[in-house]
Image (cartoon, one colour):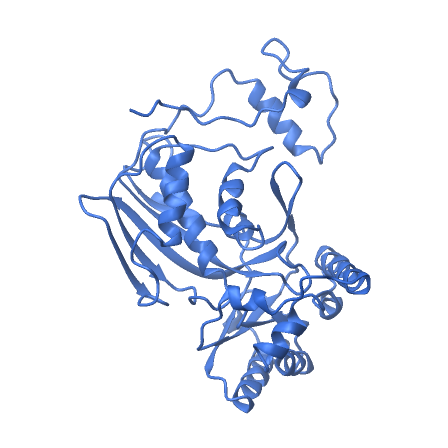
Length: 388
């Protein structure tokens, strides 16, 4: 028997020394940006937390977004969620089984080495409960092994499904426990952070834990991506990189990351083409793996894209454009450049003999979320949107 363990809130004695049940708010005056400290004090004011809705569930469906990592110079630390979604349904069953439809359905492993299963196990481990026999069904819309975060989607979707099935809650404010689990499996936060939280995320390790913060998404921004037909292996893409980084190269990338974040924060779309420049991984991968990369980047920018870069470890090339307003199918095409950019990227692909598809979408503010659960969380008094 595994002992029951309630979800916990990250405790930091150094921060919480001045808090007590008698004086839960402490004496410190907090500034508007100190939202994690405010959450600590709110939680300290509650004697019992996280006991509601802790019952295990029988089945859950989770929706997880694609992600685009690095965004140029932000190697292993910056990523963006993409409005392109896969769904996984996990159900208690008498026999283990994985079924799939859509992108990469034939290629993905159908045993417990699947990252989705690893995510589920990590969730049950966090709950201190054994993993029951489960059946998995995936509807894959994220292209498999194309640099759009299919692995991270499997990890994050699995963790969330496991937590729901186990009836276990994790602390977020001040600890980001879900991020800790996901990043420990993936090894870095650039894909898992935007998969969890949505938007554009900047993730680092503080020396104690992983943390991530959101950068703003400029209004009217669209994503135009060329997705080649062939698979890109992250291991091969990492093997072509240099083991040592010179001072000049480090200074170059640090400056570009600073411009990238500043451009996003100020919605200065024009400066994004400088912000996504990189010398740490894109030149090496372009030279040895993806000969079309820099010609496609140049063609996209010449056609009006704000910028273009290698998405994750490739092979997908991502271009960012501006000018979208509302539903693009009701907007005059000459106000946008997505069609011209897409056509330019396809021409380069044809010149290099690369087959693939062109997808136009946008960044999404939302991360992974539950869309269906049995039994439901909604009650007679409270209804949740996914259960309406």
